[in-house]
Image (cartoon, rainbow, N blue to C red; front, side):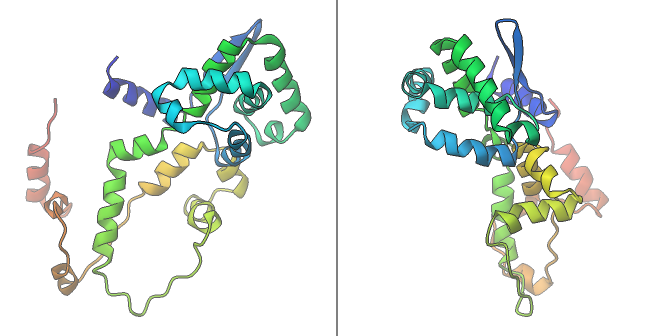
Length: 237
């Protein structure tokens, strides 16, 4: 399967929050999508692994196997977090310990390494953002915003993840704090926030200050001719 097709499947799996399943003996488990809350919880374990990121890029399975051989209990703890879904489960020391011990007792190093590799490489948020061109769109919007006269506008806050992400998501979608942290996947959350539709109004004078390449890529939705030209210029293959 080519990379583009695989990427399309990965995006579809992310949208529907599809977990990846595996079996240990007669038991069946799932690697659930990581939420913002789980990401911060798992980060503590990941940092204790002494992960060699360069080796993970060059020889991923070899690095995963090395981690299991040197930090087996921590690897099983990380795996336990990934296989628990709700806030109640993840924050229950008893539940986490029982799950971790199952993996320690019933799985060999090679199987744990395969699953740990999946856990360490499952975050495709940056890849999706680049694939959709969201990063370039944000950069272009930032450049255009510089032309906006805002002498009488002052902004405060947004100094931490509380203001830049959690509060913004709660305010925009009317979600609860717990929903943002523990229910929606981190990747879906980030893509929703970064790819939200934003409009900037500029005066004629402000427009003159803009010096951005590909400004012609903007399509005036109020102009029938502009819309038709854009449609005709698209590739439908």
